[in-house]
Amino acid sequence: MSAPASSKPYLIRAIYDWCVDNGFTPHVVVIVDTTTRVPNAYVKDGQIVLNIAPYATNGLTISNDDITCQARFGGVAHSLFVPIANVVAIYARENGQGMAFELGNAAGNSGVELDGSAGEPQHPVLVESAGEDDDSVDDKPPTPPRGHLRVIK
Image 1 (cartoon, rainbow, N blue to C red):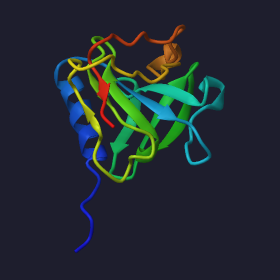
Image 2 (cartoon, one colour):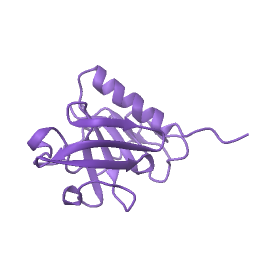
Image 3 (tube, rainbow, N blue to C red):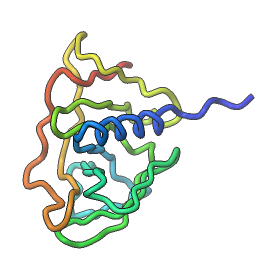
């Protein structure tokens, strides 16, 4: 019997759908490495935050292995490729609610709960965001709210 599929892509799709259904803007925090295809000019400290809202992307696909789409950065369209293993968080820009994932946890459970009741949450460093049209990159990094995400080890 083979190991069960990772829950991570299913959780990413669920949070994405929840964001869109409630009128929120879904953002993903991505660790950028040689397997990731994003505009390097917008990478800060090895990470990038991408706005993956329907209005900000074209042809968005969130598969069990990767996220692909086209998005505009500074008015220039780019094809993006993000391995699911490189996604460290997905959240709603408006209220910060979402889910964070431990690095290297692509093949297993999320290791995260959405309860800020026990201890201070650990937030990834949030940097630039891809968005719509010529204003696709935020001028300043989003500030993560406190109390929504907690990494479970």
